[in-house]
Length: 358
Ligand code: PLP
Image 1 (cartoon, rainbow, N blue to C red):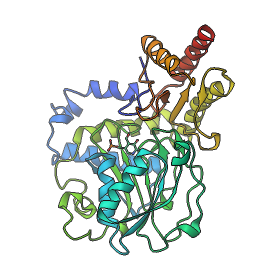
Image 2 (image 1 turned 120 degrees about the vertical axis):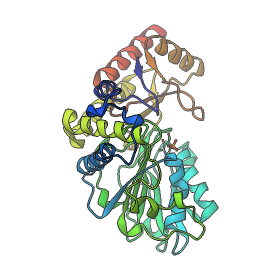
Image 3 (image 1 turned 180 degrees about the vertical axis):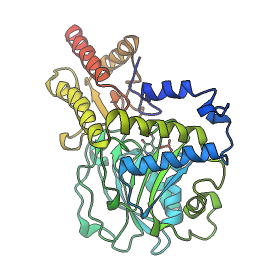
């Protein structure tokens, strides 16, 4: 099947094959990576290589720490205020969808969270224009969700937050195109879309932001704990990190890096957007300027027809096309691992469905 799931999502076939080959005996160790002590030399080499590949592929400057954590992107919604909101105790938020809202509400429990702008008025179908004069100059951080998985929008321009560290949830766009890490204080992502399996959360944090957390912060929710222990204060998600390493090897060697990945993702997204713009039945739901490369929501305007489409598509092998339960319609998530042929086949299927149901 072609899997259009929003996450966990497809992994590159080459990665799965390599993992299968190495499943019973990793590199002559006689063990599966799953069975290995995280304190062993063999495993240390895997996590080191994963970090070094991520640094190379994303061009991460030396003054940033890379942390391999657990708890999903959702745990970062709390770790950020606990660790960063320690001076003024305030953070600015742009509300562009469910995930941005969740980050905001979680911060509210622990610090003073301020809403700078929101696109809730039009069901989050655009990214709001931001006026820097409305930003809190004393905020401890400024939070955005770079790519909004549910609504299918992405930032085309970063807010100018001056000296206030910009923090971005990049769960659904990390590794999809080059990103200038130096513009951010923190980047964080759940791995289950573009990096590997669920269970791993990657945090890329500027070293000077790793300080003392708020009083009473649990050890495991303290960035310093993980930074000082090479992400090995406790047992890290060992197998997920290993798969992430294989994904990074695939991006570097098979794809040729993030510039190439971006070109490939643009070809894929344009195939689907061009069809949506020409179709009389299917319509994209997002303002063109803010269209995501990764998540493409669309509707027919008729709920029964939407349901028929989702059902027939699944029967034809195009699975997980149902839109998020809060928005309805359809959504095609076309992350890095989705091949160009997968999107082409979907567009052909949509053309055929339109012709039969016009
Ligand atoms: N942020 C974004 C943009 C997401 O798409 C998701 C999950 O889909 C999350 C956060 C939540 O991630 P997790 O399930 O890893 O906590």
